[in-house]
Structures are given as C-alpha cells and as structure tokens.
Image (cartoon, rainbow, N blue to C red):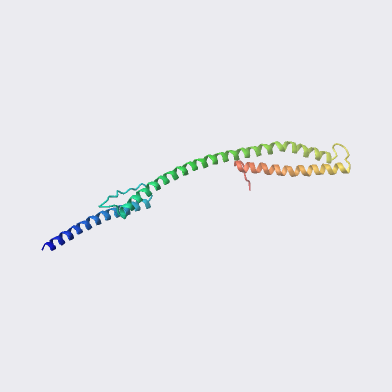
Length: 178
C-alpha cells in the first residue's frame, strides 16, 4: 500500500512537473512564433520574456538568443535607414549641383556661339568681297587662300550654329516648325 501511495505521489508529481514544463515551453514557443511573425511583417522591435522553470533549457537559451538577435537587427536596420536617408540627401545635393553645372554649361555655349557669329560673319563677308574683286585683281594664290578661308569660315559657322541649336534645345528655348 505504501508502495502504491509513493508511486502515485511520484506519478502525480511527475505529471504536475511535466504539465508545468509543457505550459512554460509552450508559452515560450508561442511567444517566439508570434515575434517571428511580426518580424516578417517588418516590426524588428520584438522581445520575449524567457522564464526558467527549474533550469536553463534549450528553449530558454533560444529565447535569450532571439532577444539578442532582434536587438542587433533593430540597431542595424535603424543604422541602415539613417545611412540611406543621408545618402539620399547627398544624392539630391549632387543632383542639384549637376543641374546647376549643366545650366551654366548651356549658358556658356550660348554665349560663345553668339560671340563667334559676329567675327565669322565679318571674315566671310570680307573674303566674299575680295573674291568678287571689290579690292582689286587677285592672283591664283590669293584666290586659293581666300577660298580656303571662306570654306573654313562656312564650316565654323555650321559648327557654331549646331552649338547654338544644342544650347537652345537644352534650355528648352527651341521652336520646331514643321
């Protein structure tokens, strides 16, 4: 009879111990499951409360490791967000500088092309007058030199006109007439 009583008490104690351990482990596993679900949805600020039943078991160690990992993950994520924000600001500033530099380049090209047109027009006009005989008779060498000058001025005028067109296109001041 004592043997049955002792066995019953031990069985009942074992059962109570097993139920308490099961409830403790199940609670930790439920917390881990819930926390990992929230992390998968982007909420990295997750912590679980590991409790010891009688000793530090694998699930408790897993819970502590989980808390360490989520803390480090949250810090890394925050740091990464800060770096992305900072880099975005740097890129916006670089873009603004590039736009300003491009505008300056367009204005410079427009100015240079305008300033080159006047002397080229004069050179072309005077060379045409000389070739037409307005300054007197020309020998063969003079005619060849003036023809070369006129051809090169015409080529330069085309280049300057192209530069002016590019400048107008970039600044949005061009009208296209079909």
